[in-house]
Image (cartoon, rainbow, N blue to C red; front, side, top):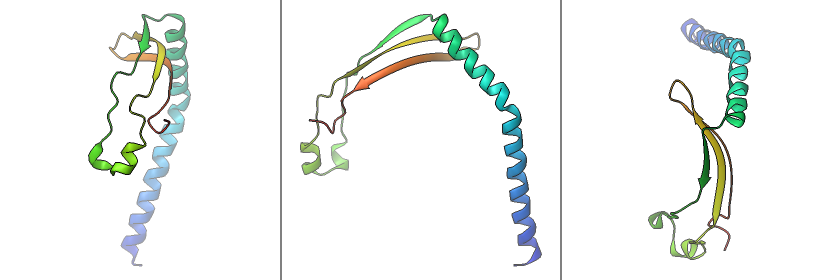
Length: 105
């Protein structure tokens, strides 16, 4: 390897290490914001949401007939959630869902 390849590799690794340092420096701030958003959404939801799946579609062109014949075309499912909008217009939600997927007949 010539010197320019070593310089390029060193520069790449150095830049990655600097980026990782910045991420860890902001990790505490990020975790605090994340926790506050969860707490506020849980304690002060603006909406109570009900999730009901309405459409199940399988890409027939992507699978052969043998596979699509094994699909459950009417899977059931649903969920419930709490949500709110913040002052920046961002949506925050906490929700749980359960469903039986198309592989279970």
